[in-house]
Amino acid sequence: MLNYLWALMILTGILYASFTGNLPAVTEAALDSAQEAVSLCITMAGVLALWVGLMRIAEHAGIMRKATDKIYPLLHFLFPRIPKNHPAMSSIAANCIANFFGLGWAATPAGIQAMKDLAELEDEFTMNHVPQNCFIKNSSSKTKKASEKLSPQTKSKKIQGPSAREKSASTEMCAFLVLNISSVQLIPVTTIAYRSQYGSPNPSGIIGAAILATTASTAAGIVFIKIMSYLDRKRGV
Image (cartoon, rainbow, N blue to C red):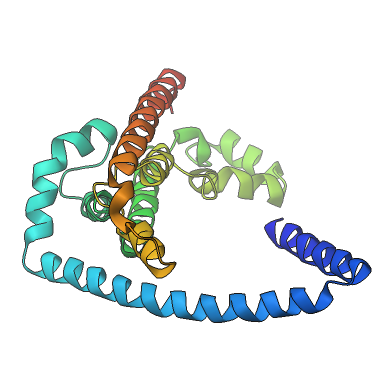
């Protein structure tokens, strides 16, 4: 959908410029923007490489494990179904720590890994809590005759009960996404780098406002997570 929206806006701008005689200005703006994009990517690549490297060093030095242990009470409060030593907990902790220091791009690899770990955890939960009526029992002749009358489509639906929710995000995955988007940022490094690239006289002047804004968003996200978790427990999910 976004691809169609972008294409529509670009075509609208080009058509409007053609009818108003500003097509050369559009071409010049496109070339200038392309040059700025390349310069910005080079700048951000350096910032990203620095902080991702520091995160890797901290991980191999055991600092991330210690940090995970320190913030485990908070993570357990938000994700009570995740076992303490599960890999998902470490990935979530790494993502939260990176976001806390404003390293949005550096937090992305940990966030992707956390989603993969949460998907595997959900598969384990699903396989360990399969309703017995999802399987076709052959303990009696009546049951065997009834199963033989079922169409292949019906059999496959019954047998595939455990994977019925394969394409659905779990409660933990949704909670992690909300937490990732609304994370508190102590130092918005990425935004400061952007401001510095575009010549701001005081790139770090937004730190106070960023702390207040992200604290409010994180508080709202945590409240939403707990409300949805309560509703899921009430529905027996």
